[in-house]
Length: 222
Ligand SMILES: C[S@@+](CC[C@H](N)C(=O)[O-])C[C@H]1O[C@@H](n2cnc3c(N)ncnc32)[C@H](O)[C@@H]1O
Image 1 (cartoon, rainbow, N blue to C red):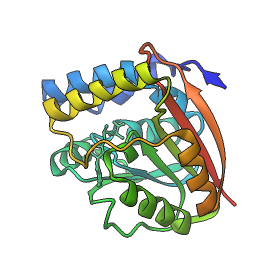
Image 2 (image 1 turned 180 degrees about the vertical axis):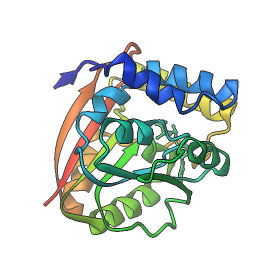
Image 3 (image 1 turned 45 degrees about the vertical axis):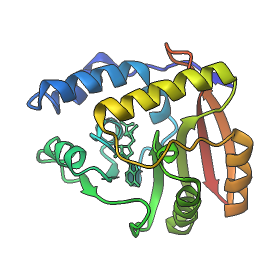
Image 4 (image 1 turned 30 degrees about the horizontal axis):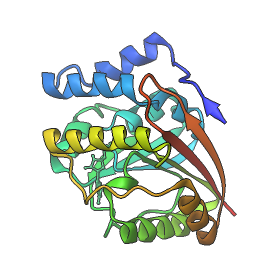
């Protein structure tokens, strides 16, 4: 199934970016471009409206903040390897009591029990073994009927994969994104791993302005 981008209201976008208004121009420009190129708004619709959400690899916190702005009943903890990104994300929190950002390495972090885990454009920045270990821990820490949302990239069609790969490499190089060598999995590989770990899975292909093979895995703990 293909899903077109589902936009949120302008007011929400304004509120979201106002959280970053006091931050430096480079970060704001990067986030504006990222907002246009990646389907945050569509993915948000699949995230439950309440509960404790761990947003793993939260970067500057744009997706965590979107989740929190769209429902006060979502408590969000973002975790990222980059100290610089985490500090900037934490600067957006203000007086909100139900969102915070922590620096942590997903290869070694001990996750708290939670209702939802999101991995938005993160897993392919970790090596295959680390991905598997993390997904096992997600299954362990999610409460009964918990949801794991993974936004990643397909490896087909090959030309789209290649285009996206070059984009990812360029961004990693230019912006110094932390992580391992890029490690993408095929959807078949993802599905068999997630089923083995104990999830049932729905997949959704995400359309954006770019011809990138974005894919969403909605995983329910069995
Ligand atoms: C492409 S960015 C995505 C950030 C955010 N999810 C978003 O969509 O804006 C990938 C993020 O994963 C983080 N990352 C990579 N490896 C990590 C690890 N081992 N532990 C925690 N974060 C990691 C990077 O620091 C980076 O912020």
